[in-house]
Length: 158
Ligand SMILES: CC(C)(COP(=O)(O)OP(=O)(O)OC[C@H]1O[C@@H](n2cnc3c(N)ncnc32)[C@H](O)[C@@H]1OP(=O)(O)O)[C@@H](O)C(=O)NCCC(=O)NCCS
Image (tube, rainbow, N blue to C red; front, side, top):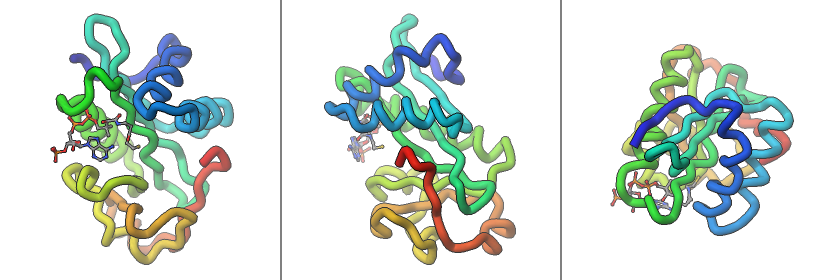
């Protein structure tokens, strides 16, 4: 398996992979719309012998400024539960920290995302359109994070 930044050559292959992973069209559509509106800040793919087997991306939130949304994370159904998703989430989270973002939010299973540093407690006092129970944050700059407005505003595609 090889992890790298997504390039424009990958764009056409990504929505079908995302749709295969989720078994429906919604998340593939989300990826297309976020790209169309230039909301994507970071994007990685996992490949095996030139075949696309995994994908992950982070989008710029409208608010709070300097923060990202991790979504979606997709691994081809034939390749799940073998560490591909974990490797992708670790790679993109490290890249977000290195690039100087303040924090990344995720909506998902807390048991899965806590292993990568995404904590539900860090996001509890933020207003969000999604469930608090499944909203977690990975904080890269605690000082900056502490002074952010407490409202998460997602790009319209969400
Ligand atoms: C969720 C997903 C990205 C995980 O990637 P993966 O390569 O299969 O998983 P990994 O091998 O890195 O990690 C395995 C762990 O993920 C857990 N896992 C697998 N699918 C999961 C899911 N849908 N929700 C929560 N946890 C999940 C496994 O139980 C396992 O947990 P354990 O280590 O405690 O046993 C992948 O299974 C997938 O694409 N699923 C369908 C799409 C989806 O639900 N994406 C996540 C929401 S954005």
